[in-house]
Image 1: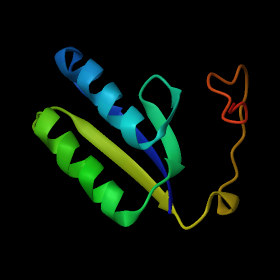
Image 2 (image 1 turned 120 degrees about the vertical axis):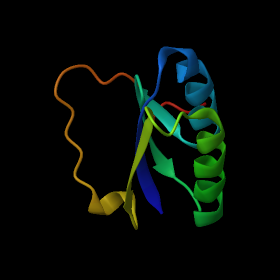
Image 3 (image 1 turned 90 degrees about the vertical axis):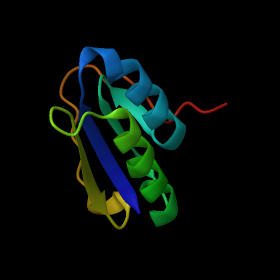
Image 4 (image 1 turned 90 degrees about the horizontal axis):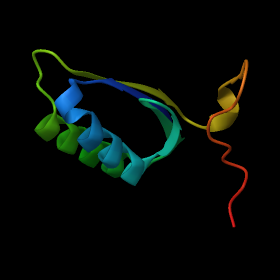
Length: 87
């Protein structure tokens, strides 16, 4: 499946969430990530995120779609992370 994940966490936890999300998805901009992920890997990501988060104050929002082709993405302004330049 293809997901977009957005998090909002306290300052003390931002670096840990960034590192965690980069292990599973592609960084797009600040606290926004996207990419293909299996259901099992998504469950791992959510479980590990809960270990970092303060559930009273922090949030992780995950948008899911079956495939990227069903998602219309428009970038206005500069694209922060170009995913087409793999070596």
